[in-house]
Image: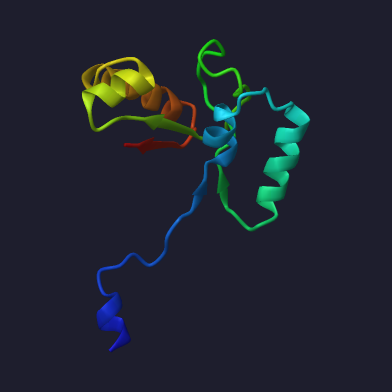
Length: 116
C-alpha cells in the first residue's frame, strides 16, 4: 500500500542552501568576510551537501557578494518584467548569455545549475 502512495516520486531530494548567497545580499550592512565564513561553516555542520555562497555580479549592484566558486548557477525568469528587474535583460537575451556562461563552465569542468 505504501509504495503505491509514493509511486512517481523521486528517490531523493537534493536540498541546496542559498542563504549565504541569496540571503546575505539583501542585508543593509556589509557582512564582514570572517562572519560570512563562520556562518557558512556553521551551515556545513548541519549536514547540508550543497551551500551556495556567492554570486558573480557587479559589486555596484550587489556589494555583499564577492568570492570564488566551484559550481555556478544561472538565474532565469518566467516573465519579461521579472527578468528585466532581476537580471536587467529580456528572457531571450538571458538565454543567449546563459548559453555562453554554461559552455565556458563546462569547458573548465565547473558544474552548472539553472534556476527559473
